[in-house]
Image (cartoon, rainbow, N blue to C red; front, side, top):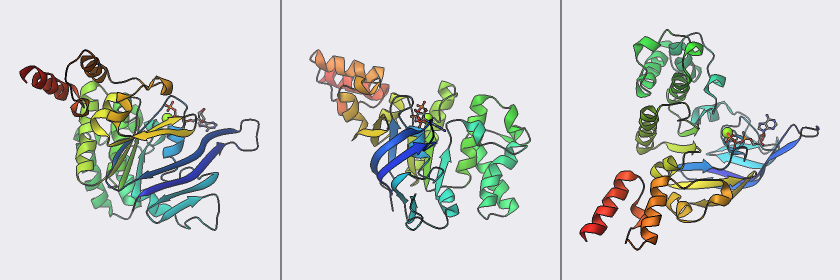
Length: 284
Ligand SMILES: Nc1ncnc2c1ncn2[C@@H]1O[C@H](COP(=O)(O)OP(=O)(O)OP(=O)(O)O)[C@@H](O)[C@H]1O
Ligand SMILES: [Mg+2]
């Protein structure tokens, strides 16, 4: 069963001078097994929106449904128990330090599985497996998560969520702070997890990741969903109004097409696929 937002509004600090309406009438639908991206300029409401998927934030108006769980300000309509939702939806925060709290990396990553009923030994095994997936070996097990670099902290935070094997994986700026190779490996890992059936919700400012990995993109603007389409469709059009930048190689492909080359833009999702298209045009 999928994720559904119906007429969701969210206001920070209501009825105070700091009141701020961050989400305005959000309607969206994410099917099981999709890989979707959520994009938009800084402050448009992306992190606020994804925090509703695991009920970290509860709508001020409207409702969010994730499988059979309902989150709503109306106590009569919402699900009584939300702890199973936290196992169903793994949310990796934009700022990983918010997520880390144990004395050692291994304890931190095994906290989730233990909390969701695995024995101590099983939880440690889950943690070791997740740490290995994010590229952190044994030498990290006994280190304090607080003494790691920004990129290492992000990997630990992601491992902590992977260790609980969520059905929905929400990652908010997962590649921020990673070096280019590390970012590529992390995205490859999400592709692998996606291929095994996990639904992925990616929040990012990196449009080339959106083009390469996502099936569908939601563009947010000032607390609203301004556009829902495929990444290719988004980048074929003019996106300056959303303060987004077309991935440079895709802009190059568009320019080649404008100059008369018979490039099929639908086949250009990264540099190798563009190179193939150019070769096809030249050979044909
Ligand atoms: N705790 C809070 N109290 C009051 N306003 C908040 C709070 N958190 C966020 N906001 C405001 O809500 C709006 C949406 O914030 P949000 O963090 O969802 O944006 P975002 O799209 O994730 O931005 P970024 O790309 O910078 O991560 C912003 O204008 C922000 O200032
Ligand atoms: Mg954010």
